[in-house]
Length: 557
Image (spheres, rainbow, N blue to C red):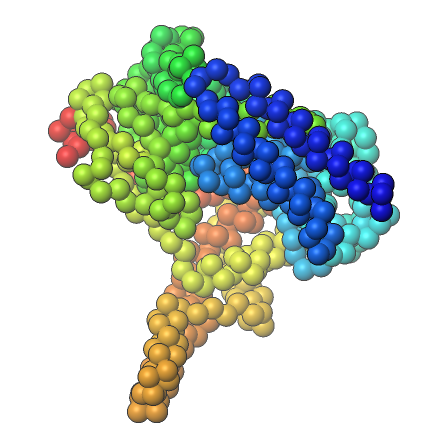
């Protein structure tokens, strides 16, 4: 008991000491030292009393983490504490590098399965396939392990080996010994020609060398003498390193051009970022594709291209994150990722949403009243606005999947059918050319005929709400027969829904099947024909007059 009390006393004075050290490390910028000291002392004494007298044993680490997280949650969504155990994941987000086998994994039943082996890395080279269930690692069962558990076991020092037992559709169990490598997840997972004249570059992240990868992609595309235009796709790209955003814009605009500026509380950190190198091509017509998932560095790129009238932005309004984070080292190999500034595109506008709380379900900024927006001008004099996100020059409505398609995807039936298809077909046509036959689509319908993929339509949900409310208000008996008639009319026939949404389901099947043979590049090539944003971009790029008109002031109200 005495030893325990001594430990608590030592711990208490350690907290006070750390608090005082922290206090005296603050820069002399008018901070109220007394308030800081007082509140640190209150916190330490409160923590001590809880640890000493609370009825149950306290997990000090968890309690402190909760306190830290709640404190940071009162600031903005992007200021975060990074514990020692999270450092490696954070480094991967910044560098795109880790030691492992090079594959994405996902949960399926009791086991974790390979969902996406990266082309050219150990998993693919050892013929691990999407759909392979990992049932043992180093002789130990993986049953009921999570994706996080399996991911940690698959990662390791480059050059080390890991022994897996997998179960494959149509082949049964087999063993694989895979030598880990340093995995660098590419910022540009795909580039190529959509048609004879238009190149396409998919940019999925902003880790180290993102600018170089975009530059290399454009240089390679320009080897095609027929190239006349290019599409840069930043849809779903959450951002990353600010200087890489500048490097990417530099591929398309001249040396010395301001791309973005940052302003914060610490004036010494206010900076203007300009392009440092000669551009690769300042004239080729270009489109930047955006959506609600395009955030941060993606908004620097799309906003700068728009402000400089270097290209046309097409798609949906971007996320609305115009804040810059810096990492600050803390004790015990932990770090603080703290918001230090806001960034501004060349026109002077800030992309940051006006508030953090009122956002869409996907986190992107909601509608902003015109009265709260400020007007800015692009190089050509077009009107652009702040208040949250980049508004595209050409808006393409976001097309939601049908309920039946959502259900087939969420219950992994599209994935499972592709796994079976791959086990029965050694080769298929190129991703751009592959088409699912009528016979194969009928095979899919047979495959799902005895599977559970039920779902409720919005009309059915509304009808159930009506029933609940009518019962609460004692009206249901009077409308019971009418309710049953409506329910029967709304009852959907799953097979007819599959036929009704046949084209959409075939697109999803073709995309998933081609990925089994051609990996990440198939995801893009198989989708070009039915990608509304891509098709709109081609329409604009194929019409020189429309393209030029969109870059003139009269096109924006």
